Each structure stands twice: as structure tokens, then as C-alpha cells.
Length: 200
Image 1 (cartoon, rainbow, N blue to C red):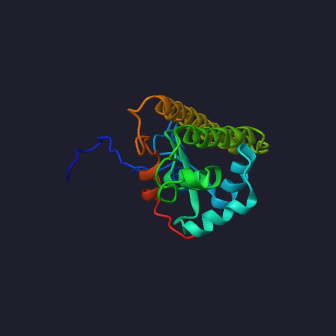
Image 2 (image 1 turned 90 degrees about the vertical axis):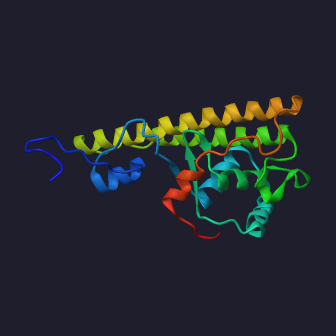
Image 3 (image 1 turned 45 degrees about the horizontal axis):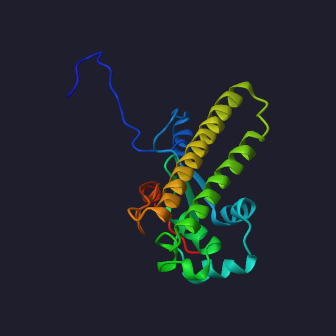
């Protein structure tokens, strides 16, 4: 009806991350702008503690905040709102926490440390991903290796973006033009698109 005989027909897979493309269609997209790296909250908390140790008793701040969602997402632009909020609640001093961690910490230096800790987390996870053994099957190896490499590239980009935000926060401590709420939050649309919302 809308195309001529023997004409090439195209479809759109929509804004899908590589996990979804691999699971449902059997391929991945290189440098996929919709890709995300997903952590469970438990894995996030364990890895954050490796990147920037915090007192285990501070987990109570997370429970008290009644955060929605059970997954934390990193994108090429940084970490999602849930990751930022949890890191602020665990790494910030009580007097620095603004609006339950929804806003950057009152101290730009402290906010910079939170962002650096998230960047260090992405680096740690990238190192762990490289340490995974390769599958024995050559065809599976190729696809699995490409998938892992894409995730590592995403984590590297995320770490770079978070370090850049950290520098912006630190510059804000000496420059009044960067105020509270001025730091962009990456990945919010990605987490909304995936539609997962389960309480802690």
C-alpha cells in the first residue's frame, strides 16, 4: 500500500538499550545512546562502599527516605537521580543533605566528593567487567565480548561525565554562579522509560 514492489523496508526498534536489543532481537548497537548500566540497590550499596567507605549504620537514612525504585542506572551522561540521592544520603554530613538528597549537598566540595565516588564506582565496575571469563563458544564469545565492551565504554563515559560534574561542583564552591540544583541529572529519562518502580 505505502511502498513499491522490491523497495527496501525499514523498521524502528525504538529507544532500547543494548540489554533489550540483545534479549529480544539478538544484536547490540555500538555506542547506543539509549544504553544503561543497571545495578540492583544492594549491588550499588556494596560497590559504593568500596569506592567511598561509609558507616553501615547510615543505611538507615536510605530506609527512612523511602526511596522509590529498586534499580540504579548509569548512562553515558552520569548517574540517575536514585544513585545521586542514595550517594548523598550515605556520603554527606547530615547538615549538608538538602531535601532528602534530592538536591545537591549544601557544600559544593561535599557534592564534588559524591560525584567522584560515583565515578570511582563506574571505574570499579568497568574493571570487574573486564575480568569476566569469555564464553567457550566462538559465536557467543563475539557477541558477549562486544556486549561487554559496550558496557565498559558506557561506564567509562559515565565516569568521565561524573568527574566533569564534580569539577563543576568544586568550581561552584569558589564561583557563586553555580548554585544548588545547577548540576544536571543524567539518566532520568532512561529510568522513567524502563518503568521499574519498586520500593526499598
